[in-house]
Structures are given as C-alpha cells and as structure tokens.
Amino acid sequence: MTARIPGREAIRKKGMVRAAKWLALRRISQLAILLLFLLGPLAGVWIVRGSFSASMTLDVLPLTDPLTALQSLLAGHTLGATALIGALIVAVFYLLVGGRAYCSWACPVNLVTDAAAWLGRRLDLKKSIGFNNTVRYWLLGFILLLAPLTGAVVWEWVNPVTILQRGLLFGIGLGWAVVAAIFLFDLLVVRRGWCGHLCPVGALYSLPGFLSLLRVRAARREQCTDCMDCYSVCPEPQVIRPALKGEASGSPVILSGNCTNCGRCIDICPENVFQFSQRF
Image (cartoon, rainbow, N blue to C red; front, side, top):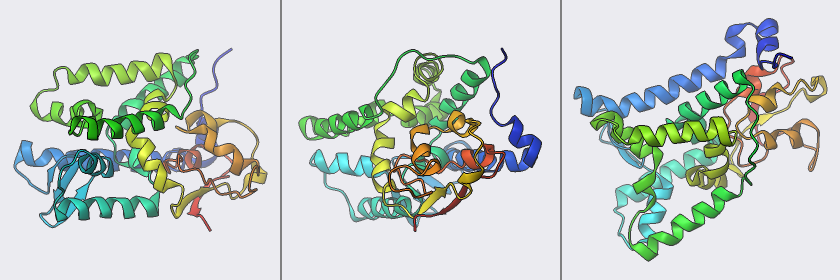
C-alpha cells in the first residue's frame, strides 16, 4: 500500500500557498539569517559580525547565545557588559515568541533535519530505535558541568551550528561528516533524533518556551478528522495531543515549551484546526 503523503489534502483544499505558507517563511528566515553571517567574510558587507554564538548587528545590536554565556560564566570567564546585554536580549525575545522558535526559524541545522524528515516520509522509513526526549536535558546538564571542570566553553568544540558556519566560510572539510551524521541519524535511526532528542541548545531554549506568549492553538479542534498529518510533520508531535484532544488542562493552547512554533501543523491541516495565538 502506498504511504500517505502528509499535505496533499491541505493542498487540495487550501491551495499550495496556504498549505506551505509558514514553511516558506521559515526557509526565508533561516537562509536570510545565514546569509547575513556570510556576507561580511565572503562579500565584505558587514551587516552582522560574529557567529550564532555571539554577534553584533549593524555595530549596535549585540546578541549572545544564552548557552554560550552560561557556560562562560560557569567556566569562570568574565563576560563584558555587551555579552551580558546580548544574552538578555535573546532571552527576552524568545520568552515572548517561544524558545524553540530559534530551532525552527533561525538554526541552520534545522534545514538538514527537516530534509531528513521529508525524505523519511517519502520513503516511508520505519525507525526501530527509541530515544527518550529527556536525553537532551541530561546532555545539557553534562555540558554545563563540564564548563567549571574544564574552564572552557566545551559545547563550542562540537556545536554543529558552529561547525557548519565555519565550514561554509573556510571550507567545510570534516564538517561535512558532522552534517552527514546528523542527516543519516535522523533518516535511518531516530525520527527527529537530533533536534527532538539530543540537541542541548534546544533543551535550553525550551525552558523559556514554557512561559512564552506566542502559542499555537487548536482553535477548531472539533473539526479534526484524525488524519494525523499534523503529527507526521511536527518536529515534537507529543506536544499536539493535549491541546487537540482536550487532555490535562483542557486548553486548546499548546503549552509545552518544546513546541517550536514552526507553523507546520497550521499549514498541513486541511480543516484549519490550528492557528497562531497567545497563551491567554
């Protein structure tokens, strides 16, 4: 029997544009952010200086990855006011829009994991190895523990985002092996294995996500036909059911901090069950 392709019914009912609107906007956002980091070194147009870990935009807006800042502090490094302000700006921003929005709207590795998920659905690959999605929190704790023990920001040695950015600038070399490993791990071993189960950056960003204002709401959940397309495309499918089926609090709002606010459930639903809203 031919595997069901999520989205076909949404395209038939809503049209291609509405069935892929948020996906298209995410791709534009991800590629635009990556391009801003590459323009300076490659073309001499210095809109953004630095990396995803710490940057300066237009020489006035500092942005610092909270995980990098936290590791630095635990390692005993003194952070300047600019770095601390940058970390505060990022934290407040993601407190408003959802911490895991970084994963779906900014992180370039998401392009790799989304490609693996898409190919896995097309090939109807069945994963046999299960991972508890709390592993990422244990990895986050381990990384933070290593900082004071080593006096170093250890995560930056192996951060796939950093490796990818450096590779694009200086010749990716062994960086291809890292990217390929993540792609194959997600494709052949565990669905959404990296972003959904292992990445400590996503684990940290999920914490402000529990309090964020911007939310996805199953506003028309009574129209749900249980086609399961939203579960198929969601990078964190376990967050959908409580809101869709009225479990726990009974609220139609997806309250989990692990929702990435990617908007794919909004795109893919032929019955327009989901929409962006706010937590209240």
